[in-house]
Length: 194
Image (cartoon, rainbow, N blue to C red; front, side, top):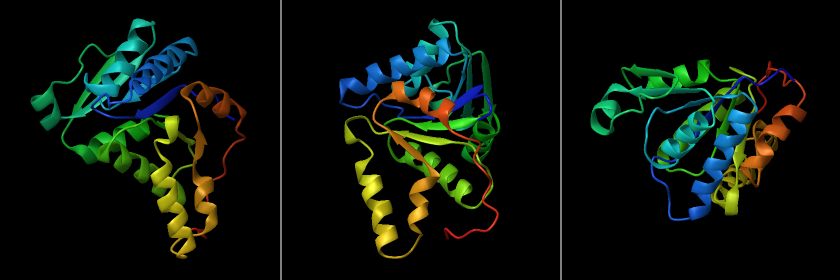
């Protein structure tokens, strides 16, 4: 597979109650910096987003933060990032994050994280990109999502191959080895998944 120069990480703007999530975000930040992989993320300095961005920078890595104007004004973006962009709205943010990334990783988060993750999975399903998508299922955090997707399949609203649009790993340390092992992913030319 092509070398991964940047990874977009979707994760919570809160730390969550499970202390392992913060440790995982720190560890993944270390791995990104050690492997010279740029972090692309939502631009905030709060929650797991702030944890991973600060860690990448502390370890000498590079960070691209992208935040919509209304969130920058309300919460304050993390302007210490290597590159920091303020955009007009959430749609512009998600598109710019997509354009700056070679792969996508979802850590624990809430509705915003889910929205971003589902969008890149949907774009993959529609053949709009062939970038890898990895979900870190630490402590079975994402199990309810997988159950919902299995229900979509059981109710015949989507094909079983929908589960092949993304990869699942139990820990952040597994992400980079997985990405390095993947073959080039072909674009979907005939959409049989809808």
